[in-house]
Amino acid sequence: MNSFKSLSIVFLSFLIATSACGNKSEEAIDTETTSQAAFSSVEDATEAITDDASSTMTAQALAQIEPASTSVTITRACSKSGDVVTVARTFSGSGSVSITRPRMSMTIDMSGTGTDTRQWTPPSGQTISCSSSTGTVRFNWLDDAIINGMQLGITIDRSRSSTKTLTVAGKTKTVTDNATIQGTRAVTWATNTASSSSILSRTKTISWSVTRSKTFTKNSGDQSTFQATVATKSDAPIVVTVERLKSDGSLQKKTISSGTIISTMADGMRVEASFSNLIFDYTGENICLPASGQIDGSIYAKDATTASKTFVIQFGSTISASVTSSSGVTISYDGGTAEDYSEYNAKGCDLERES
Image (tube, rainbow, N blue to C red):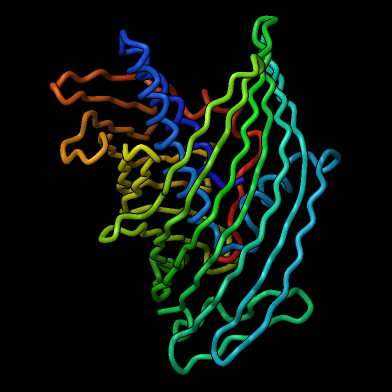
């Protein structure tokens, strides 16, 4: 699974922790709801950043679980009309993984289905083609005349289900998460640049609007439903720079230099999350968490123009976070180090082949 997935886990865990600050159950419920909105914002960034790669995130996740317990089917069909190449893809799969730690064990069962339609549009005067053998688009990623201004439009319709069974100190909890994602995304590439004599950099700008619906079922039978529209801010799309070795194309680093995602819930409450120089180092040991960078967020009630809470998450040798209320009271948190989140990296990190 992509490295940004672990970031969403950190993000969610951090915001849910803030519910302990309130003395009223209503505040705890409100905070849990906003934490889900925040989670969806970063989870959507996770998928959007690699959605132009060779397989969907759900299929990537399933494919990287232990092969003996995984079944994934992906079909592709490629067609061309004028200058535009369209790739239609369907996928389905299921799998499971088990994790064991001292006094803790966890099993995750997943399944997913979906369809994606992707339209590739090259710059004027440039030509791209279909591969009849693989059902994918074909062009030279190193040709600046093709890359600079290449556009990709994606229509998404996916469903996923996961059941996590966690046993700690002899006590077992089970949570089932059923989710659907529908919407559109748009990616535009800029020219390749040489960061150094050995590194090639490629920048892409991503914008999207999708609707996410989730139903959580606990082992008690209690259910909660969450629905939100997750979209990039109109004047602040996500800007991502990918660095690779010129010699063999191996991935070295990804940076989300800027961008803001807004998650708006059915009741009008919204969470805005902005990224600032969030760097993932793929040459180090902890590639599933940012090596450095920051996320700044704001939580707004319906129709409000002033945030009820703001938060900051900083990544470095340790992970730290703080929440500030509208009255100016700030509470800080120590998020530990990347190793503290190792159980969430069970599915691995997709290193994104294509972009």
